[in-house]
Length: 191
Image (cartoon, rainbow, N blue to C red; front, top):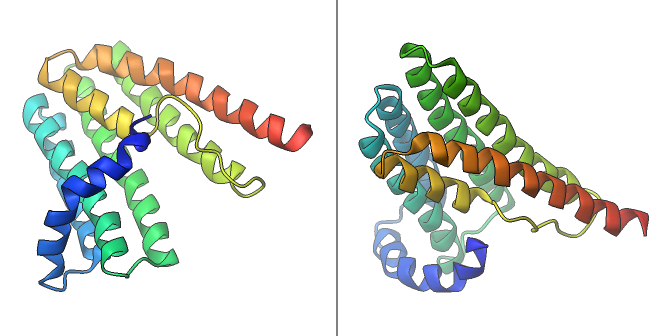
């Protein structure tokens, strides 16, 4: 859904990418820097500082927008860069959910601990279904809850101090997205 806004976000991000490009910073460096910021976000989530964690999560998301934009406008888009970006996205998601899980473990909230682990599993499954589907069909960019939406939900619901509700939304709409991708792949391969 938010991926439909990519032409607009690219126009907003392009001046930042051009500025960074003047210093010959590689897109892969921005990708790895985004992972570092995700680790900082996870640390704050683990301490229960959800607003600070959300701010760092937003900064990490900004790096994720910049790296691809920088690669395209500087003519440095590579297959390895795309692979690294996807891999770092999974790692970034993992550490943030780990931070959230640590917090709920520390306060002994078993229900929320389980929910945060399920949110991680669902997030991985969303990504996996697309990656695996695209091994056998042209594309599988379907579903209502891609990574940008999941990240935005975490940010918003952390800031308004309703992280539990955000996790419920991620699990619910994430499961729907997995089903949508399975069905899409089924229709493309079995008809």
